[in-house]
Image (cartoon, rainbow, N blue to C red):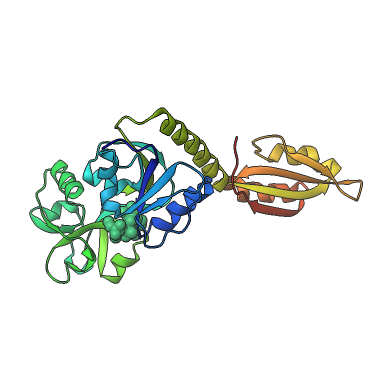
Length: 289
Ligand code: ATP
Ligand code: ZN
C-alpha cells in the first residue's frame, strides 16, 4: 500500500480520552466536521485525518505506520510494548496502575501475594512487576470490571487503573502499591514519514506547547496607585515586563501581566499588601512565547 499523504492520527473512539483529545486537536487549530459514529474523519483545514479506534489498538497502529501519530495513555503503550516515539506528555488522563487487595484479606504487602491469583487487564506490566520482585503471580486476564473479581473469588488481588480510588473503596479494596504512573501521550511512528508530514507535526508540537503554557498560566489585571508600581513589579514573576495603563484617575494605573498558575495564590496576598486592588484573573486560550 502507498503511504498516505495525509497525516493520520489515531485517537480513542469512545472513552475517557475522547473528549479531551478532540479538545486538544481543536485548540491547536484543527477543524473537523462532526465525530459521531465515524471511523475516519478528515480535517476541514489541514491535510490530517483522525482514525477513531479502541485505545488498546492505538500503539500498534502507530508502530506499524498505519497511523503517523496517536493519542493514548502511557499505560497502554507500555503494556503493548509497541515500538513508537513518545513526542510529548499531554497532561490529561492521569491515572496509576495499582495493586489492590480486599480490605478484609488482611494483606498489607505485595510479598504476601506470591503464587496468588491477580486479576488484571495489564498482564504484561503486572507479570513484569512481580518478576522483578522475585515473586510469582498467577495472572487472571480480565478485560473489564476487574474490581469485582476478588468478591467472585476469581482472584485474590487485582492490578488495575486508579484515579481517585473511589471504585476501589466502593468494592472494599485497598491499594497496596502503584506499579506505573500514567497520563495521555502523543506518540509517533518510527516508520519513515514524508518531510511534509514532519513539518506539520512540528507545527502542531509548537502549538501544543503554547496550549500547555496557556493552560498553566493566567492573565492577571489589577489597579494600583502610581507609587505602588515599583513594589508590584518586584512581586510579579512575569514572563515579560508588565503592561501598565493609565486610568481616569491620574494617580492610578492598571497593571496587566501573565503569571504561572502555580504562583497565583502565592503572589496574590503580596500584591494586595503592596496596594493592588480589584485583582482579576483570566484564563488564556493560547500563547506563543
Ligand atoms: P476502549 O473501548 O477504547 O478500549 P477502555 O475502556 O479501555 O476503552 P477507558 O476507560 O476509556 O478505556 O480509559 C482510557 C484511558 O484513560 C486509560 O487507558 C487510561 O490511560 C486513562 N484513565 C484515566 N483515569 C482512568 C481510570 N480511573 N480508569 C481507567 N482509565 C483511566
Ligand atoms: Zn481499552
